[in-house]
Length: 194
Image (cartoon, rainbow, N blue to C red; front, side, top):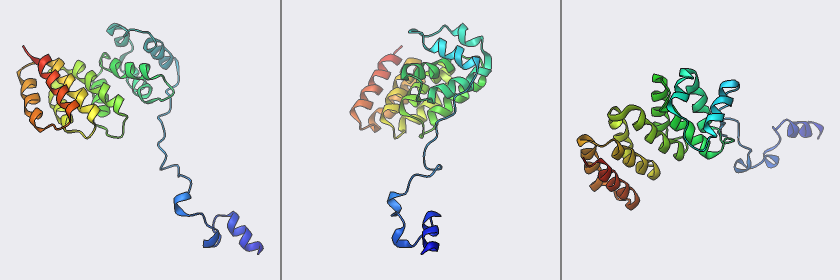
């Protein structure tokens, strides 16, 4: 009996005493872990700029250099940061003078595990950052499973304008069967008109 009690305490008790598989507590590997906050004065300065009601000027972000890219990326996914500041962090990546900023935006856009709002904001920011160079990357996301992202991509493409963008949006329109995304494609076409 004493051995059985010790076995139960150790988690290897008889089957009749074991918890059903569905009642098991989640393991550390199954619980998504938010990225750790980036400590230091750079994070505090970035949060200060992100807390302003209007977007900080481009020069404010450029003065930080590439060191601010991982800070902004972490802030964008830090759920303890207010949503408005998180979205401003994504947009700010478009203003940082660093190739890593564009790569970070592209990674955010293409990662289906990231929140929809982050991916959607990354679509707009990538268009701002790369201009026409973003068309191919954005076009691929017009087929994404995330409806909100497809809407954001259609609008980001429309803001870029140009003949190539019109062709991309016109090509996708008859294939899209979700009314709200079709509307976004139509709006994108309106924005893209010369």
